[in-house]
Amino acid sequence: MVPEKIQKAFNEQIMHETFSAWLYLSMAAWLESEGLEGMGQWMRVQTQEELTHAMKFYNHILERGGSMELLAIEKPPAKWDSPLAAFEAALEHERFITGKINELMSLSIKENDFASKTMLQWFVDEQVEEEDNATRNVQNLGMIGGRGQGMLMLDREMGQRTFVYPLAVASPSSGGE
Ligand code: FEO
Image (cartoon, rainbow, N blue to C red):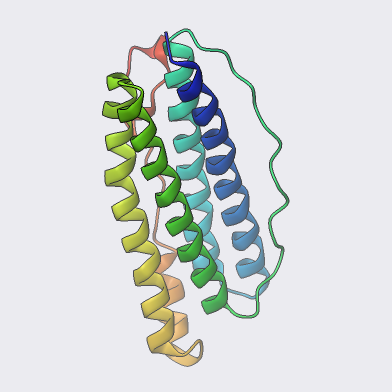
């Protein structure tokens, strides 16, 4: 059984991860409307990753006999002042998510819920990568200054990103984690 407080907090985290997907999908649409197809593709892949994060919490709750209470997802912004502003907002959002994961880890320790603690360690590690990627995007855009040949090259490079479904998010019925 999953402790009541953990179940409630994980349900909220499903909402945060799904909002992340919604935010990045909105950024993808805006970037593509600005002619930055590659950056849009990068955000599309990020959207898919965020949905797998939400599913990892969802699967964990169901696997432990918990109940699901999906929450409303807030409307994300639809435009930003510049591509740099969009990627800065993405970095700020990832820092917010890291804070949420740390809060969940503290709660799992307080509740002596070792199954959650093990699962959350994956997210602690993942957030290091998430913040690193988001920081690199901001730095690259900052160096280029949002214009010229460099922008074209960065857009092409970011467009190479593809989505790989993580095995660690397989559903309980598929025999995965
Ligand atoms: Fe699921 Fe980007 O944090």
